[in-house]
Length: 421
Image (tube, rainbow, N blue to C red; front, side):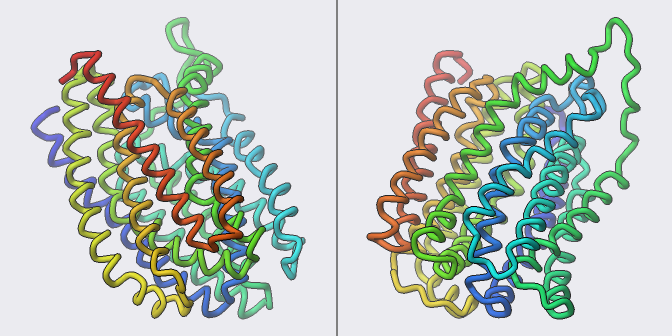
């Protein structure tokens, strides 16, 4: 790394931090606002639809996003090098699971047709947006990334309240429509505020064709797409299963507490993972393997100390604060600690698997997360009816712990085998 890299990393850390902290604060304010205004059942409907859309987008466009970041610095592997149909087609495919699963899961919603249509549009728009987000991250456009995220969340919150108040639309549908509008605007910001982007490649005998670039993206990206989809199952399948067994109202109360904790934890740790990923991949792609490993190790230490502080404070005060903020009753004292531990371990797992990722062991990563997610789904189905909402929280913490421990052990073996440290 050059002497200039740490300074760039610090500036990016501040910018990405703002891009996560400011929208995170807005969502912290929005969740209790939504649960109090629309009710926990409507928030449950929205949360289930959002979870399915996240899974679908990860499965169908995650391979593009991950390949973009993996090939940072490779001018032959950019969005411009892909065939023009790649992003629109992949985003459209992401609507299929949403249409099927949301329709089957949410038959009791008051306005099923508007809700399903909104969920489909949300899946397509959000899937496209995340691709351009990854492009902004790859290009180091942290200011644009931050502006787009703040716009997306802020406008969504305001629009959802206005749509509900003026049109009489139910709460879950209002939130989805709000995010459709705001995400479209945020995507426009990402594309409008581009730096001097490279022109579309002129094809020569030495320049890869679009289909060659597509093959390069797909080769690395498809296991990562499976990984992203399975990780979204591990994180958010609980609310879908709770909704099926205990009802949308229970799913909404659980989702509200989980969103504040799990997504709040991600808000705090996200700047570390966001800045470290291009630095690690860039160093590895330059052949500086030892530097890449050391960068990852340094950021892991930062994350562990932050996690300890948050978990201890959250165990002491989290339950009281959540009940006060969200206006819900948390009956089981283990719910908040389990969600906190699970959130901390999951964020650490995103660091421990980096050594597998740089070695292109993405198939192994996909097998691990799919196995853990499937076992977690089975456990959730078995225990939710018996243990209530604390069952899925315990399953989430156990699944995050299993993934983090397994990837750490495998990464250690790879380091020793490659004699990198």
